[in-house]
Length: 92
Length: 150
Image 1 (cartoon, rainbow over the protein chains, first blue to last red):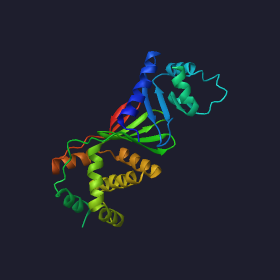
Image 2: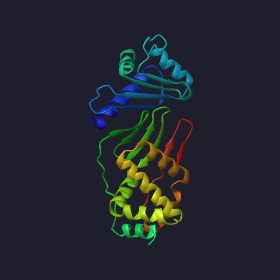
Image 3: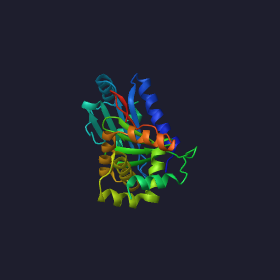
Image 4: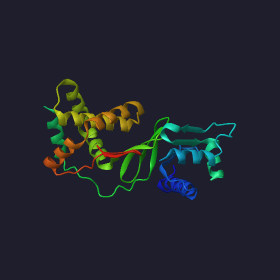
């Protein structure tokens, strides 16, 4: 089981990546199940502008396979898992 | 015997809160996009769909987990039988929440938590402080628009 360091590090790493792209999130939560090396990442942004900016960085619209993306415009939230999460680490 | 009598009996056991928790982070999935996280000082429920979080200080869980072990079944039995006053209702409500928490039951646990947020914790916290000189922090609800003490 991953402990405090791993989850905190992951979240801080995500925040750093977002901030280096001048996106300042309201909430970044990373979680995973035992035995799953990938996990799930949920990012909630303060503004619609940041939400759209993040999707642009992830090239969301041009993804043929949007499996692993859950995008919620009403709450400015993007939830990533599986290949979408890997895509995040590659793109940002 | 009343629920309050059982609670008072439990509090005579010199219940005390340890100073250091030293727990690592551990996540528990509740429903598909809700997780609960144990960390050093709190139990927090994160609603991944919109970033909302509800944070519960560890002292709540320690108090009601111990209460459940020692007196839980008697309180539930009494609560099912008769009328409860406001404090007793709250004790029963949070006890039920703690039981669901221990079972990691997502649906009913979240329903109980919403009931707790509706009735709020201030009267019980005042009672605990006045009667037993024990301080519990309020539950914290946090969203983009607001931070609310419950």
